Length: 294
Image 1: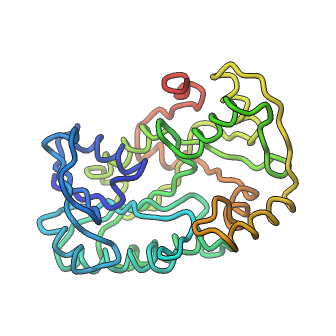
Image 2: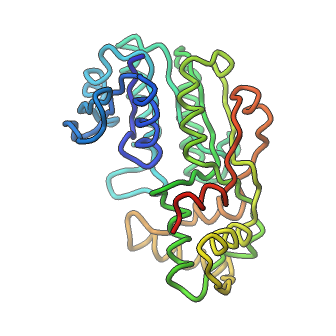
């Protein structure tokens, strides 16, 4: 099948492109720079396209049957905002899909997205979902919990802290639950969606097999790295103050008030429906980390 991937140069995108290519699908990675990349295999081509430019997307999607839409930002910059990139970019992509007769769109949203959310990140994801749901194009929307694997930014950041610092910071009381999802499991489900009729026009929430409090997650990383470190609990009020200052002077800020809201709320779901659609055994955090974390 001939598919296109927006956001194909990011952590999840690169893994998805590899999975699709190895399965025999012809993959067009839509990139602002375009151009060939070494080591990607004969099934992968890079085509020039920008979600902020509908005309460039129109050209990039010629002959494409299915589009994976992975473009997203976790924090705003001076030039990339939730409104422009997440919402506007999705509008442009849908317009280009219609012009090219794309048969299906598979969108990577985020767990926690809803109509009633009070975070701007989730609000933008909800707006993008609504655009896709009302497009008239068959779709599948994935809402994963935090995704981890080699080269991810979150778990690897925590691993670096455990390696280098005698103290590991924990925001607030650390009681919020996370459900880390292994990248290999997510990409397999994304690939299978191409031919899985059970996934048609569905919103699929998915997390890993474990719901972990933040200190439990840190403890697993310490165990895998064989490091003894003390936890340092930092009050939420202090982190909010720090985030406010960072947002005022840096774009993108390394920490935002939006992110603190999401962290405080937690990020878990039931996998019952997802596992009815995809017959997959989900990977435990510790088992995966043992394979690649050193």
